[in-house]
Length: 148
Image (tube, rainbow, N blue to C red; front, side, top):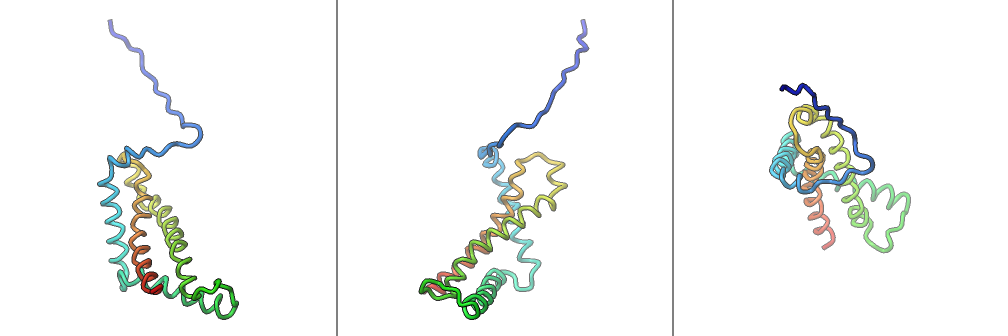
């Protein structure tokens, strides 16, 4: 006897927060590595200044903040040298702002990859945020030099 009963699968979204599956991300760590490496290569190949941009951008921002807020507006820095005070605050803020921006843009830019192949979707914005860590650490080394 042939059973012609069809199986129906109902897919419903989970309610509330969906936990991050770190085991699944660990299984796709090579993809995370290669996407991060790709983002770093693209970032530095498209600029004339290359890696020097990671140093120049926060330094110029520090100079502008020092001139406008330190000299003209006379904002206090609690006895610390104002350029170092500003630079130390700009570094994490710049990394956060750039990571947030590039993570959002990476989802739009990788739309074809997301719709055609299965992998944890968190890997794409995470790779964009991890690529920005290189700039952050280069700028942190400059902060170390400034503090000495």
